[in-house]
Image (tube, rainbow, N blue to C red):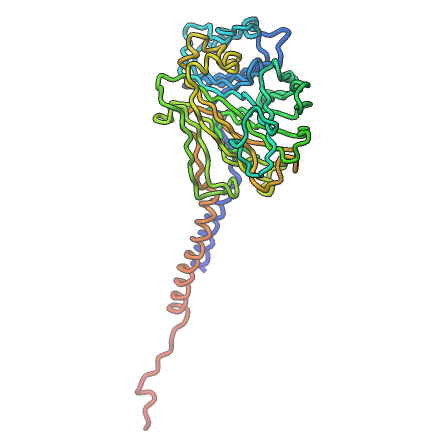
Length: 429
């Protein structure tokens, strides 16, 4: 009985450990988030600007999301001041709306020190008629009857006011319509870029379940119900510009990190990181994504398709000067004309789709998730739950065998008293 009770205690401990791993979901906020929509703007705010201040003990991250000019996410890392009221960014809307926005984003507290800054511009959307079904954007170039290019600048694209779409923890940039003169237009919220804010570390609820922490923001790039015209084989691609303020002039690079574990994204064994400072990841910015997107709002492996990357390609000083996307961005408003030349920039294209997946027109929906953050990019690893289950699966049989063997041995030794017969008692008289 004692052995049986001991075995029961061991099993109970293992079960409690697994239950703890499953049920524990508490967290401690590591940053205090404050969201301001169109701060300082009274009228004529365009698509608008969202400013999120993520205040921590060691530093403060200032996230700026806007469709004023080129749709951009700008992140500025500063020291954290004791003066909470003035520990924030300021915006000059007259300059933001002018032809030269340099100096429109600034810190007016002399004690504020900018430690680092980086961000991501969404510049152009490509729609191409993939008649060969090879899902390769590089096979098409403009101008072409098979390729339509949508510029995201506000003189071509009208954006909905984010005051009507956003909340404290979810910033939504949504196209109202593109230029109606285009052969195929995007209208009625068919293109959405939404940013999720976090004050702790965890994983996203939706596939591909990217990790996040207090130094990151997740974005969803969503296309749905777009009139593709006569292009029954339509696919889409996206152009982005990733930028950072760096004394290091080394090129940005994309690393492809392999994993043997697909617990969170079934069938996906890699993750991509575009790094602003490849040599010192801990002090740089990153763009992270898994090479997968989804063709229905209810994300599942059965409706997954591929994301293909092209680049990155470094922008030259001439590119930065002559590219309208840069000159008309919130990045230019922050860095200014004299400093924008020294900002490291690279553009990358992404295409959505895989051969024989039915094209975009199969479901008229594509959603791609990425992460923009500071520091070392999160890496997939086997979770505590999986380790617990594996340990239980391998350990319990061993425990049962050991304790079972001991129980049998002890029972055989002490459970019976063997009766021994002497020779003298059985001799024949």
